[in-house]
Length: 97
Image 1 (cartoon, rainbow, N blue to C red):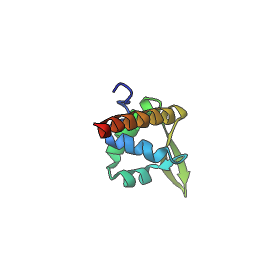
Image 2: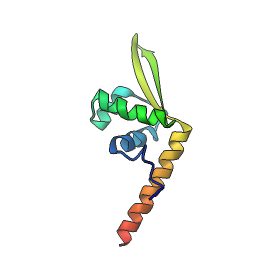
Image 3: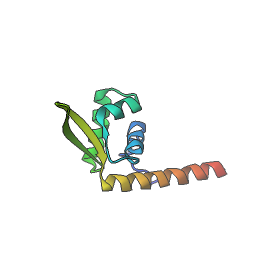
């Protein structure tokens, strides 16, 4: 299946994209809790998505504390949708056999 995106495919990245596809952005701490991973694991996966142009990482000050926010780019949203379509085709083929 050449349609599967190797950048998105690892489970933590796939789950992160799934969360981000539903919203404009999320705070790093929220994503970390939802995924059940450490700061370093989430940072590594977020950086890989950012390097591919799929994710933006921004810092904002909230209540005098700096927070990190994650958001899918337009390119990231397209790539995630295409990856999901490829997974659905793969699953449909497996169910028929």
